[in-house]
Image 1 (cartoon, rainbow, N blue to C red):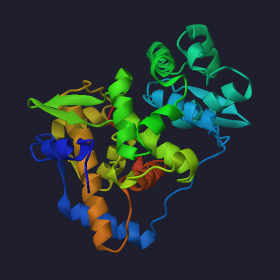
Image 2: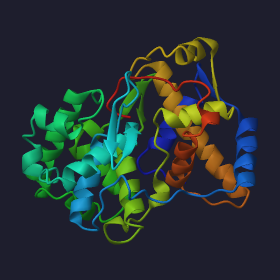
Image 3: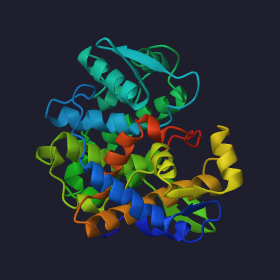
Image 4: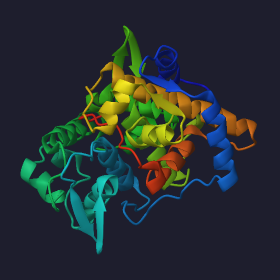
Length: 320
């Protein structure tokens, strides 16, 4: 797999030197056989909770969505109601932003975003409880509005055009021009790249447009999975990821880990590398998946009770 963003190789560097997290190679094969046995199917795009009109406005909306796509776990859980359905976490975020556009809020206007107020944002996310890190989300929205206005004429699709409709170049453009997308860490003096939200924006764009129009992006196979807190939870329950005793006690005890610390970096990097090993193993079994498609499968699996027997790790961060 080509690695133009350097995510895969930097994560491999960590995985080969990890002290607190390890990959069980036998479990990789076992997990792949189980996946093939149950039938591998990539979930379709969810239009119910996501805004989509097939135009440039959708590109702007997706950038807002993935600019804010992080940290839903703090208790008490934030919850909204949308079209008679109670939603939490990511789907609550997506539905809130869809509702805002439906109600006429200028969420897709970059000039408005650069000056959006805290009270406006709180209104968008009104529900039971408060969405975590509200002021950080405000800062990021203002950043999106400012950079889009100053560099891209207020059009997120200009990012796509500048990248020549190449997936990796689009993700790289986000990382270079929007500081909040620079999802990087240091490990033993070595730079580690994850770029979770930058890559997931590219995948969401491709997925929602069905690979056509603004979603007609070349090189989608060059993306990695998106290192969040749900994928390692699934891979740990599958036996693929093994945590050392001290780390396991912290995670199971819901003790927050240090953002950018050794434990968090090892969890995220081993998740990315383990997923690549799974992808390769599946290919040997005749099942061809791109990493972002595997990510979608694993993330969907995290909603099943069997993969939530133990808690996911907790880090207060804007990166995921």
